[in-house]
Image (tube, rainbow over all chains, first blue to last red; front, side):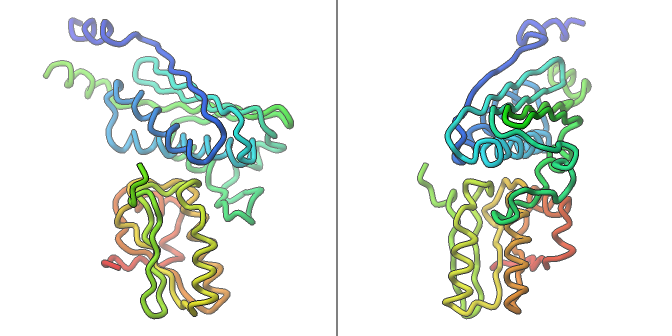
Length: 161
Length: 110
């Protein structure tokens, strides 16, 4: 119990980082790096970090390309943790998705001319434990992704070192 | 960082175009790959495109779209596409997308 107490005194049980990026393609990398930096406090494996970076990249790229058509408007990102569960929310006020069910199908894309693979949502689902999508035409889209990071064991091991 | 590792580099060897992908392959870093490969295929009579992943540590689904697009383009011209120096993370992404069933992995230095 002592190690648990030490851990809690260092990092609050629940904490949220919020940031906004303008919807330009060069900010995709920034969104990934900021999210990965937040995650370091959760003691993730390299693979977990890469998984989350990929999922964030997909959601943010969708917002930039499809939501805003690269017009420089605001993409809002929340990164939070509760215990070992990471939640990343990516929100835009762009065009919205007409049929979310269809958009989530592998290989479905509205931009085949731009050589988009249609694998964005598939990758989010593959690399995160859960993905929720809310969207309204003309209002925007919100993607909420969750993933359990590390195991209780690795946290305890780390604290006992 | 206007570093070269963030830029795609191109090299032509006889009828082969080698595309040296950057450290991170995403929607931003991959802009222009389509135009350059089409220009080289048209003007340089390229028969094969080799995508070299030696420098690549990150790739999202944008990379999949590019590979499939270039594969279809070259196939229509009677040419081919191949992959080289695929590492751990990229390998995982390519495997999930089923790319190895379509595009051969040379596993060699390009």
